[in-house]
Image (tube, rainbow, N blue to C red; front, side, top):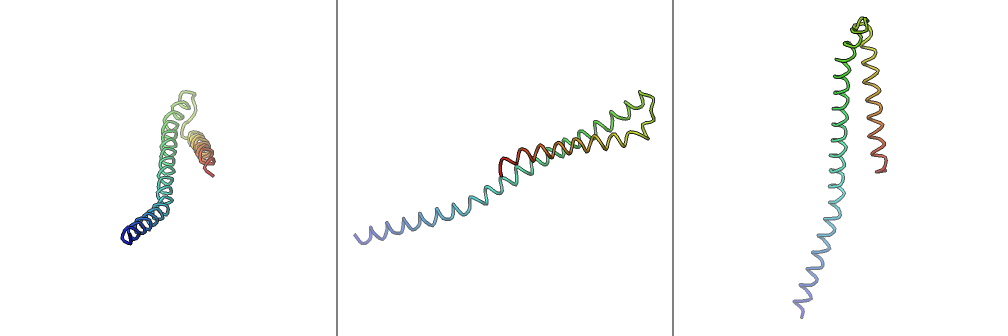
Length: 102
């Protein structure tokens, strides 16, 4: 009888220790997953910004040349504006998606 009580006490204590360790470890896993998700979103944002800048950097000078304007004078202003607007709305979009987690 004494051995079975001791065995049961050992199993209960072991289960308590195991569950405590798991519960302490879970927030770290959740934080790591959250960091990975935010990193992935920022990588997508950077790709969007680079694609917008590349497209605008090619399209705007061609468009200005076809309109008879000097692309060297005007394209930098328009390119900066397009890149800033795309970046602003992309960051706001990510902030809006992540605001539900608060």
